Amino acid sequence: MATSVWAGTAVCLFLLMVIVGHLKNVTACSCLPQHTQHHFCNSHFVIKARIKSEKMLVKKGYDAHNLQKLPLPVLTSAQRSFRLWVREVYKGHQFIAVGSHPEIVTSYYESMCGVTDLEVGKTYVIMGLLTDSKLKFTNCNWREPWTQISKHQRRGLRYWYEKNCDSCKIDTCGKFSPCGQQEMERVKQGDSCFWDPMNDQCHNLHSSCGRHDGGSCKWFQTHELMTRQNCTRQDRKMPRLNHSLIP
Image 1 (cartoon, rainbow, N blue to C red):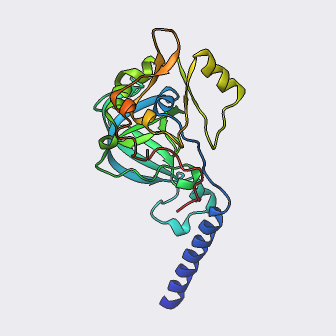
Image 2 (tube, one colour; image 1 turned 90 degrees about the vertical axis):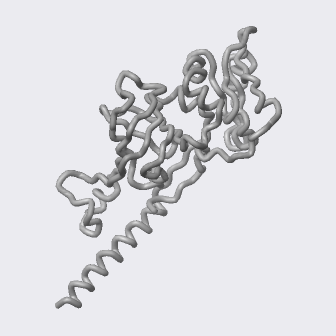
Image 3 (cartoon, one colour; image 1 turned 30 degrees about the vertical axis):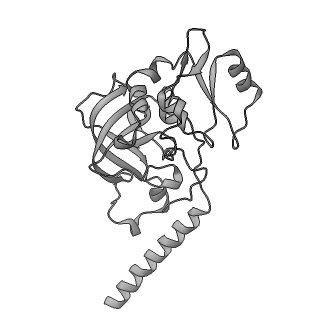
């Protein structure tokens, strides 16, 4: 009898692995890299927060601790929840308070654009959207450990990014996303800054785009930008162009 029970459990686990393996070939998440300032301006909230805990969320009536018994629709709709301790709020003060402990959710699976790389106990800057009164983010939203954020990015988060959101755009063009006529016209008229993420991380780490005295949008010339110092660190938030589904 015990052997039959063990065999049945093994079959269930095997079938679950087959289903997950099949899904890897069905769905993928892809997103193009964007400058940190662009992410800031397009986010509903931007916060510095410590990760307090992490858990899996499934539909009501199902047990997240019993994966082999979950139907496929429940598995694919599962979410990952992070409990936060908010240390600073750069954007979204109207619905997030410093010192609060909100929950932020994402898909449970990386290949469905879920965020899977945050570690409990570490502090990050996280950007995302407020949807259905819930804080949400995906693998395409900007996030970075606080210790890896450059000096200029910290200044941008606290002041420069928001100041220039309405006045200047950043047109991301390059090998994987050639500039179109609209983008080239904006740059020509001085309404945007050009950025090629595949060839230049220096502007992302050490500069922001804003209106100068002449009225045109230009990159601010910081010391690091002019000397090309500390520009070799690969920005972890430049999203990979393809994600295989479900780990």
